[in-house]
Length: 248
View 1: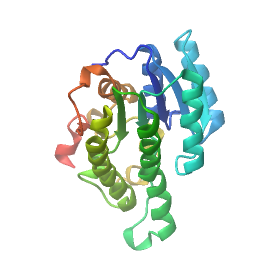
View 2 (view 1 turned 60 degrees about the vertical axis):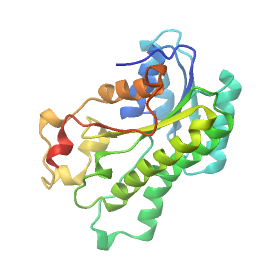
View 3 (view 1 turned 30 degrees about the vertical axis):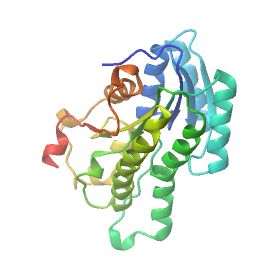
């Protein structure tokens, strides 16, 4: 499914592990120059070195960034443009979850989740709209929880639903700028976030092995949406869940 990304400049947030790292790796394989963005600088450096071993000659940089910090987001975009000469793709993948009943969620919990899962994407979209070249693409990583959810993840589900709406707004305002914006709704993916989910550990949520995807499978869809092959796809919310949404 992947499209050709040769010569494109991409920012991938949350790229030190999971879907983000798989996306950065695939982008490098497809010829993109990639900024590996993560709050954990050591993990991001390790991801960069791993990708360089897999893709000799890969053009990569690491940018330590808290996506909820506007100054750090602006710095990351500026550094990427300075190093690679522009910006063509942003993948807003960074995210976190809080597991609590609604009546135990605090305002701090909500602010923490919203600041990363929703506002982090907004901040990168804002900066991308200022500098991204025509033909550019933004891909937001939402979740099936935006549509159907489970107990104890109210803030996460709300943030991911709002991210779908933000994608629609970005697609409308981005079109005159020559920028496409789309999002994906992954289901259960074989990442630490899945297996550290207390709902799964406690058996409150049962995951069938056939419903668990690989980060590489999600990365393939992200790469397609980021490429010219998806040039007529604008404002879409694409479920990438192996059919799990149908029985949530």
